Amino acid sequence: MYPRFRGRHRLWRHENGLEKCVGCSLCAAACPADCIRVVAEENTAEDRVSAGERYARIYEINLSRCIFCGYCELACPFDAITLENEFELSEYSRDDLIYTKDMLLAEPIKRVPVADRDLYDTPIPAYKGRS
Image (cartoon, rainbow, N blue to C red; front, side, top):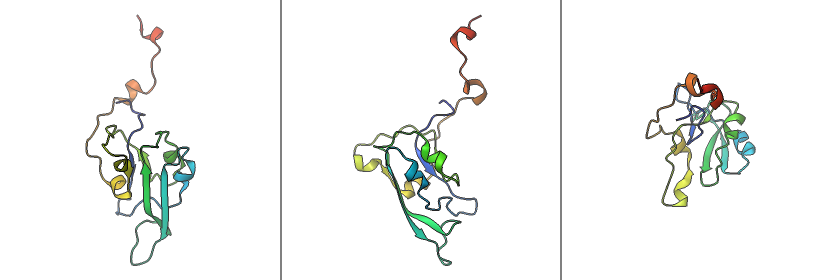
């Protein structure tokens, strides 16, 4: 697996268990395929979900529309969403390709080995590889 491969999306939590996503919708605004839906809600003292004032009550990504460009990852100021190395995303139904917040927060089912970054990060041109 190439180190910079962009596969399945994943939402992250802080070490204390709070979600990193604060529902700012910058990822949805940056998405050229318009496949991200974020509905924010206010945090309360009794029910604190994220570290900010708000949290994403609904966070959905329609993977059938996603072009895996990584703009959502770049737009997020809190590193709440990343594109991981999981590439087996096929489903039998289009409805199953809409990933909900619970699915995005879950650990990946299968661990994918990543190639050595020092060896494969910068491709060596074919004419330099010859002896």
